[in-house]
Image (tube, rainbow, N blue to C red; front, side, top):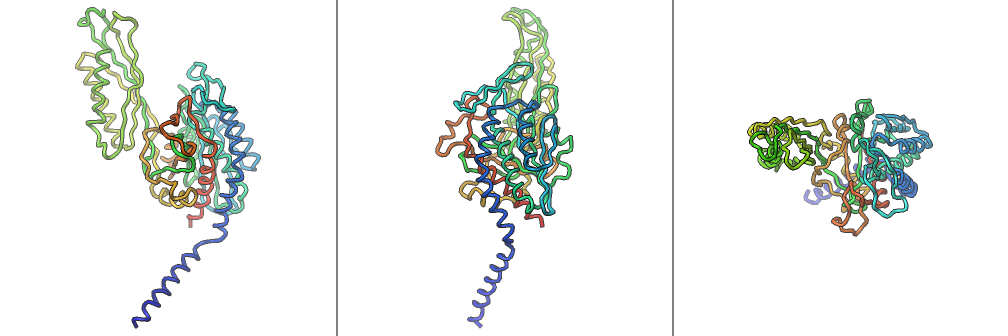
Length: 439
């Protein structure tokens, strides 16, 4: 009997192993390998598209040439194409040869009012109009790479259309950086226009100038902060600067509010749970040295990674503002503007796709528990409606010191062409692998 038991255990082990092998469908494995090969083949085109997009950068809700460029490419692939979505957005629809889920893939298209200083043959020399002022325009956040990557993914998956399970919506979104004053735009407007209707999930990426090419970073739950801007008007009583006791000084009141507001985050929020930021970005008031003005205007930003903490921050900030002003005999009018929600990676979807990141990029190149970022992304509006997964890919040349890589939204911002291949491969495989896992 003692001799039989090890033999039985060995047979059971072999059965389990053979049974697990039987779950692997050779056709599905072949498709997964095929898209990686096609991604490499399309990379030279993606680089060429990226250079054109970078050289022809356009501002939010003004991406006319970009949209036409994208639409022409999608039509050449035989996709159903929708133009003028959320003003300048473009959507390409690929219907696979087999039944399956509806999967969204998103790329943002807009540049920024930044003058490029990077010495590139395809550097942007574009000029645009921002809030009534003529400004230089640059892709200072990498949206040119996002568009080029998604154009490449559309070409890759079009070539294996008959083997694709389900439908893919390629979403080229305008105005991620925010619509011009007085306009709607971005992901919020796309949601309002029904872009997510019928979709099961959505995937999005962002290239990063401080992350080495080939590396991938993501996390479940909140990955980027909710953002809310605020406007604060302090109303006092104007008087001569030599007799401040005859008026109410809104400048002194503003200074006290700025100082007191620093306790909102540090003393009112459970910071071991999630980060939060409250920053003042502008203060203006007064016309000359010997006049205490009637009013001071301030603006700033609030970043939060937890919904309850955000509500607490709002309430505490408003209380401090009003009570500080009242203690000086002034009046404070605080408006917290609607912003972007938390960019929230659905934990079940994130866990489901974890193997894809490792298989495509290699375990040594994947960080699945990155720190959350206090920057914001309007991809969050899609994630409010359906499960979504947002991740970062590296754009910094290998071996470079991240501290010497220019930050996003600056004139010296640069990401390397070689970083885009990881994005093409990952987005293509996320589609194939997610569809396969929907039994």
